[in-house]
Image 1 (cartoon, chains in turn cyan, orange):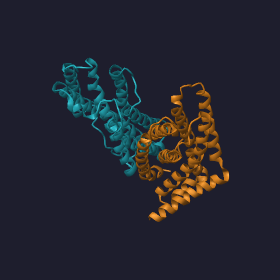
Image 2 (tube, helix red, strand yellow; image 1 turned 180 degrees about the vertical axis):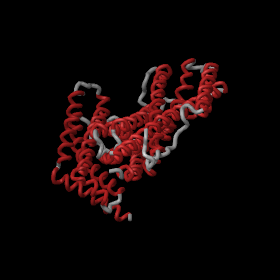
Image 3 (cartoon, one colour; image 1 turned 180 degrees about the horizontal axis):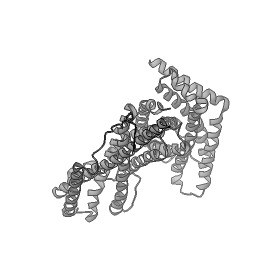
Image 4 (cartoon, chains in turn red, purple; image 1 turned 90 degrees about the vertical axis):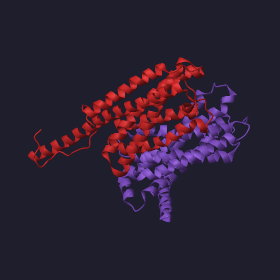
Length: 242
Length: 232
């Protein structure tokens, strides 16, 4: 691309490139942790009442944590975009929202599978399940607004992210405020020693995976923003030439 | 500052209500579509014979109709500002953005409450529900439910003023956010409509929940309205 010297390319903050050594090392670390977590979950003792099906816990809880983390990051990015006009904040918010949809889907699939074995039904209209479903629906609405709302819907989507963040305390504390058959938030501290190590390793490895996916998604968003900028510069250059 | 905030709020709400008083467009279209929603549910559920489900059904229909007709009110009241670029004049006026938000919230809530008055009577007639067993509690739940709905709806419909497919997007984006309000309101209403309910303790619980949600949603609305509409 031959641009006139007057039109210098702007520099943009970027996430580590997906091919950089630092990024590849982080990927390797995250996948090694995941592998170790799989081994630890397989080795963890069986729960006395539910048996093997309780092992969904090691997948379900980390996914639920990442759903909440994604929503928080999405809301943080949206605040930066709404109040400081930060384009990077907007890109972080979109990337986090998409990951929230992904991990929310994992929660909403693994939860009913576990519920069928534990409660005898796939779905129960109780506070924790309903509030988690609503949180996921808000993130789906955010992604829909970003995909089909055009540029004018970006601010609206950012506002939606803030309303979604309000739902997080409701999801977390719902089992205390309402009568609920869902396990309490204190269940982790009651785990046996063999289960506790596997749980924390699983949580850590899923969080590592989230950071890797987030870096990749953000790199795609940054590249897209750069392409748009270059197209604008090219148009300007062609206008000058003609 | 506080005095001018309330003055501008009342001016903006008064302007919208005066326009509505002359055209009655939103009231008539909302009222008619609300009646249609209740009738459709009534036809569809006419064979439901379990009397224990009666209050739950009546409350669900009341709030489902409120949800659909409230969306009509939101779209229309904010849409008026698009005509002749009135929104630009409104944003350039000395009125604080928070007062514009509060004025619109007040106007939409009052219009919705007027239609809900008719809806309650219609639900009582068609579903044989004891809608006036606890009129004070019912009025409070209707007020809090409507405020919670309008508090988010005004932000979203203002932000969608320039969007290409705003009719489709408004429902898709607004409904997930307002569902907690509608769930709480319909649970409280079902308890009030139930003649066999032992006491009104669940109603008091859901009213507290609605109050907390309304305060959070209104504060959030006041906070984000300015940056959301500043791109208009």
